[in-house]
Amino acid sequence: MNDAAVTTGALARRLGVSPTTLRTWDRRYGLGPATREPGRHRRWSERDIAVVEEMGRLTSLGVPPADAARTALKRGSDPAGPGMPSPREAPGARAGSPDVFVRERRGLARAAVRLDAPVVQDLLTGAVERHGLIAAWQEVMVPTLHAVGRKWEEAGDRYVEVEHLLSWHVSRTLHRCAPATAVTAPSPTLVLACVPGEQHSLSLEALSAALGELGVPQRMFGAAVPVEAVSAAVRRTGPAVVVLWSQARSTASVPLARHIADTRWGVRGARGGPVVMLGGPGWAGPAVRGALRPTTLREALTQIGKVCGDRSNITVGQRG
Image (cartoon, rainbow, N blue to C red; front, side, top):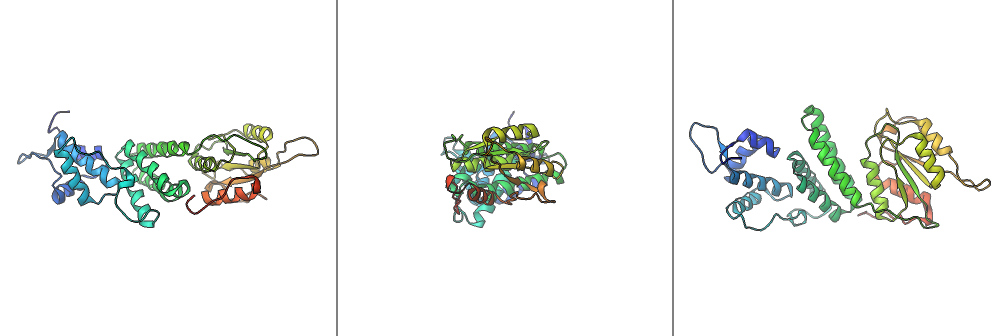
């Protein structure tokens, strides 16, 4: 790209902000093009672009705009300056407070709209490290995913790439928290599966990650698992709990839930069966007798702990 070749509109699209935001940064903080020609559209050089990109990164990390602008301008004039601070270095309110969660959600959404994958990953990793997996999922990841999804619905297909990038990095973060756990008697095992036709598995991945952190053995089968496969997994592993995830009413199947609840394993005279847990908004409607219906990740872990009793390692604290 040549110097002075980018218009304000093109730069705004590149950064995922509005042209008005760029003009405001210019007017308030002096973050505009260094060279201006009267009577022509403003053009941004590579150095100008680097400064506003740094401004966007710092505000995403929670740095106040005025402080972020001063730092961005300083680094723009000193390419060898210090690197970008991690999310843990960003100033703000006490960790875990509502203000912190709001700030982190806004920063994460801004980074996702800019398609700034490194910052998105840093923010997600930092949220888990600061707040624990459960709080990071319930207070940062889920609200941001919902906000991005609403923006996509309002704007047509304009933001589908934003939702996909954010979802992928959330999944990546969850997988890092979910090490495979060996089954050691008498530890119970669990089966986690999305119902047939259900492709949305992030919430199930969050449960898998939380169980993995707690060292609870599980078998995670992911999206759109055929009925026969779920039944076979139940008979082969003898799980204490089978979690069936359904995001939409169109994928929830009460007959499937009843079929899994009636599945038995073991030798004659000592046969057992699972407790079925129905997760997700798709199960709103007719109840399945005996099935668990948690509404949050923390509640799901608590209910699983009660089913597994003293044989499990599940103790859900406030930080989680």
